[in-house]
Image (cartoon, rainbow, N blue to C red; front, side):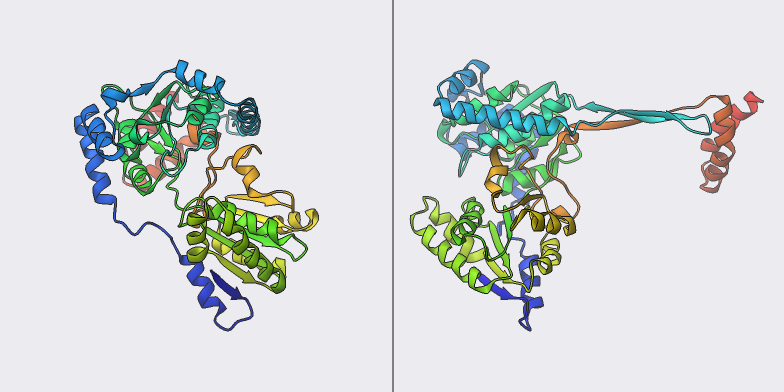
Length: 433
């Protein structure tokens, strides 16, 4: 774990190292992914089956390619009642939050008499990737599928890897809650390729969303343009900005809540209280002893964790902006948390106040937990309804409006050396005279 103090002479150099630490996989997967995509594009189902047999250790013809709706419904009904209630609560809150994101069509007529505006429509089909390796994430299915439904997507396709043919019933239950149209037992780069190019069994989609490992992320990168994607996500990260009035056990748990995701996760504490920082570090060590996910969390904290001492919490904001983290948590009094958030420019999602742990946002709060990582919050946003929609602009001119805009159009077209552009307008102006 790295410990830095803003007053140290080498602080800038060490903090820059922290900012630039990509934590991406060291394995060059691009060539392997390209081979998988090309095989699926050319050979379709045969390639998907072969890669699934090799990588997930089961034959799709034996275990079944697709999980039907009845099995998803049965998985939901078989859940313990409290878990069913939790899934329903999460779904209802996610839906309510995203319904407020639905864009509104626009149309108006300007002073020149031109009628113009924009119309929003959902894509026809969306593919949702749900990880199934280190852990199963029904919450990820809800966070991806529900915004697609709110957008108006008609065909919702879920793909999820099933190592050894086993599929987590929680994922099936979430598919039922989200009203997925298709659930396929495939994962990895081969699943992304199947969604992008289509096979005899699996019809292609228009947008692919959802997190995955390095192979999935690279596959999404390579098929972008054939389909739309949400983002190329990397390892998770959290920055906690906290004063000394917090319970160090709470703050330690907040840091470990992300560290347990993966050994490459980054958890950072920024505080204006050096004694509090020491108490948090000690609390992290204590909690790691009996944390069931300690093997992963300990590596993440040791390799990528950091504690940064700053003069004031306000001084932390420029540092947070440089990190542009996936999650930032302002653990201080509510008014000050809001004031700090007002100064912030770059973060995927923010959590305000001592009683707002990031983990709430992962499940039931409402805002999406699919967020930009690796400093991409400088230019990207979390998953939302408009990721499943596209905007079509429109124009309508009458003779008067054409006469108003036509001469300038002709002048610019001729200046750019495009005479046919100019002629298409000029001919109409002559006729209108």
